Image (cartoon, rainbow over all chains, first blue to last red):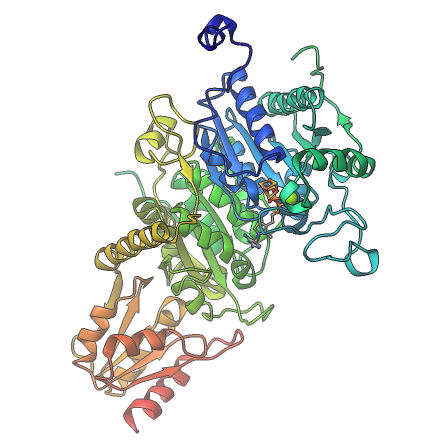
Length: 261
Length: 362
Ligand SMILES: Cc1ncc(C[n+]2csc(CCOP(=O)(O)OP(=O)(O)O)c2C)c(N)n1
Ligand code: SF4
Ligand SMILES: [Mg+2]
């Protein structure tokens, strides 16, 4: 086949979602953020919610998510995205409202906003990118940093006496009455990406069906912060992160099954 | 004309009723004395069943202000109320609102500070309100009510100004005005805006992108410092326009006055008694009451400053507005301050004494 033949529409097997624009992404090669952005754009398109979505970006590497996915965006202060989303969803109940937050944003500075929005059962979806580090500010310790893991603010490794323990936020979220769907996913290979997509789709459907709050954690890589190549970062994540943050659904009170999506 | 609805209520209750009546879409708040009646009144009135107004008791003032930020971003008329320590916590959100040009209303029913302070009235958040309060170069439109009537009337006015300029607005009240009961005429009912009206009035709002337009993005972030400076210049030009057009004040017996008292809010109420007592003794004193604290009526104070022998800034604090009066009069006239702190509300005779000691006898 020639290049021209390959480019013909009938031979197309994969394409970028139209909502994902052509702005070059600032994410490091191998970073999970880019993959999750693509999933989010695809799902909004598949749900036909392009004109009815209001997304909230965090403070963290994904602060600029608004530069890539062509829906309306509000950029929230560090950790406050769930409060921002609460108001928007309450005031525009027929809109798809979701936040996209890192571990520092969601599980540290914004712990109160996250827990209370989830516990009030706001009909919002929260996408939680857990890369166990503060990516944006250059690789400092996060609430989710694993024991022994080295970061620029725990250069000799995380130890309990000095730094306390990594926070399993998603486990806490699963105990809250207001949450209807709490799951932990990853995007390190094709099978995982497909599962993560279904999870995010389900969270978005829950938001529209008014079933309560959904939390989708994506255990993610930060190869820049971890100082590992994209491939090594994925390996390290599988070996270490998945042990402490096991993948799978933690809670699902909805009737939406994978097959019905 | 429909009969006016005259009622007797507290300033805080008046704020709640005014919000329901002026087409407010959302109230988000956290309890704190002396303003909890705002949320309590709304909870009793259940406006979500009548006008559709959303009322949420948030987990903190940080959350409340960020709910106002989100609601305002989505084009809705949203407000919060609190008292001094809570408003301190809101400063982050207010700075973000200023930066992202998101409208919204904050009501501060001030109490004594610093820190947890007291629960009695104070005006010691003047600096915080008029200087921005959070980070960066910005201003908040600040209205200072001196009666329960104004507590009610300023809710709609603050929303109008806030949306006109896409800037946060504040009602800077205090425990006296919030807690005292007075007669007032309730403002007329105004329906909440429809989706079409919001789309028309707020083309910038993030309420879902319609096909023909580019996505709306509301952010205060701009990493390119050159662009960030441009954004700041745009904000400064807006603030200049507000200074030119939106100054509000009230003059009481200023034209023949030999001495001037400048006071706002509850201090201005005491000030009325002070000028009456002074005039009974033959001392011609006038009262200038700034209604907008920012923009400050600097021009009017400068004008009066050229005609009087001295100005007393009477505030229930250690002396904050006095700095703005000195800037406005630029050394042309003696300017003194009198105030009490910590929640103590001065009596009129203390102020008369202070005026004599600080301006007449010296
Ligand atoms: C109030 C405040 N404190 C601190 C910061 C600095 N800061 C920016 S991003 C960030 C951490 C982000 O980490 P995370 O949420 O895990 O996102 P990631 O970059 O890893 O995706 C911090 C501390 C800030 N912008 N605002
Ligand atoms: S620093 Fe980490 S989280 Fe940020 S873009 Fe790079 S890899 Fe991704
Ligand atoms: Mg992180």
